[in-house]
Amino acid sequence: MSTVAWITARGLFGRRRALLLLPLPVLLIGLATLCRAVGVAPADWGVPVLVGLGLAVVLPVISLIVGTGVLGSEVDDGTIVHILTKPLPRRDIILAKLGVAVGVSALSSAIPLFIAGWLADSVRFGLALAVAAVVGAFAYSALFLLLSLLTRRPVLLGLVYILVWEGLLGRFVSGTRVLSIEQYVITIADKIEPTALLESKVSLPVAAIMAAIFILGCAIASIDRLRSFSMAGETS
Figure (cartoon, helix red, strand yellow):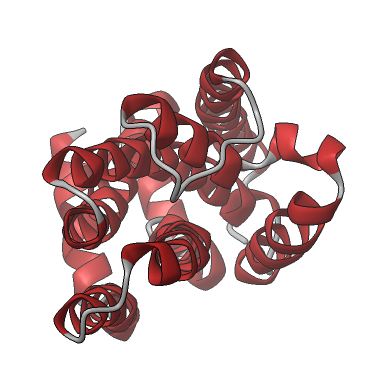
């Protein structure tokens, strides 16, 4: 399992898509630093920067890039067959891939969110955003890893989820918020450190339960899907 994780991490950072992880965190920290330096009140820039950019773009997009990359490329080019021939339980393969995806996504989003939250309010608020981002990284990564096994266009479907379901419907159709990972993240951060900069729209029990369902449900579905690859001899 550790070998699979090492190979996955090496392959992920060996591709050009790893460079896509840098601009968004740098932009988030840069905007927060600039607003703080010129004396703009956090009430004026906190929501658009922390929520509109940090939680609605940086966290899900980074998770999408990484989550679809840890296994999707191997499915596309057929090299997944080499993994499937190894005497490894499919569960271990998925957990190793998911672990790498969560680790990279969490570090790449939680650190800039912590810095931006600290600049906007306090260290405690920064920690609240970082903790919530880690939970979000788990849920997003599990979802996008599953999509990479279900379709040849996981990035496209992931963007539809982020931009349409969470970005559009999640803001105007209240019923869709129950299936919005972004809303779970906002609620968790707001409960850890209540602030006027965040407005939770689902309850904490709903956020916690639904996040767990996303993580466990998608992980189990991914394991089952990978088993069907080996049984049917699929390589794409």
